Length: 350
Image (cartoon, rainbow, N blue to C red; front, side):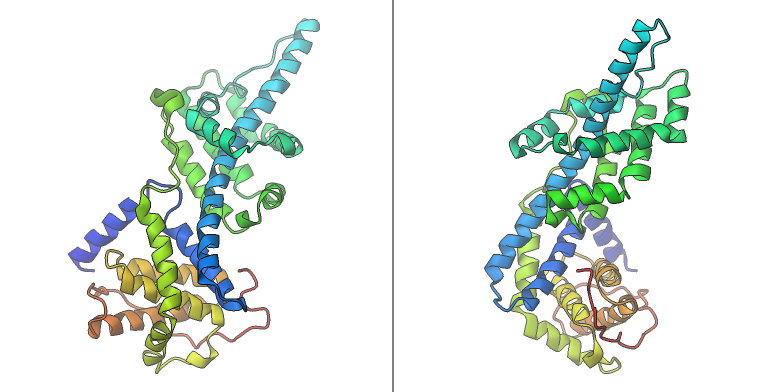
């Protein structure tokens, strides 16, 4: 890999680390909505573009809602502790520990001004899902992680924060009951949680007690550049569809292009749009991102096929002067596989 490409990849990755809605999430949404655009008989690009921006904003809603879940669990634990303390005082028994109910990280998150303001403006709350909150409390209290934490002689802020990071990873990140609650709240959240979870965990790790209630959460967008990236990528994909599909056919001499799953065509079309229209994004980043999306949204063999196709297309675009950035001399396409069969329930998980 050339030094210029290494620098470009480093700069690109640095750019994507400091906001909630990043390029990965934008690409996912564009794949979903471009596929919907072509499946919809009434192809209105402006309507789908509005849907794209709205769906991205709903992902940010979920990010805040999941942070607020930590607060809701903490409040429920505090309520339980108060009841248990009152009973212990009446019965003249040892009072229960308040350590988890007043976990230092959770208290700081509860007092966070940015989260409070967002929840108030959006009128979002876990009050309507108190049974789910209580069930999570029960699950937490049964874990060895919780028991070990409560048995510690002393704790510090870092220990408290790390406890919540582990709780989130083990009990919240993959939780079918919670997924059902989120789906009831918004249909847009079906495919977003896996990505949003990573940003919640990143936020937990970033918390610093010195910032108190002014700790910054991840912004929805760092600046207007990412919003423009979403709009420009979607529009380029649709408006230049014939050109990009011609690039595919011109470089598919050794590929059974006609048997390609339709979702694969959509994914490659978007990838080509990104290669052509965004000179600052390294080709290797673009190819790797869309190969992963193919594995997620298309057929089992799509990842290897698209990797080889996009590599060939990128080299063709560079050779013909249509793009001016290095492919990377050391980038080797995965072993070419035959085009994946079109399946009857193709792309059912879009």
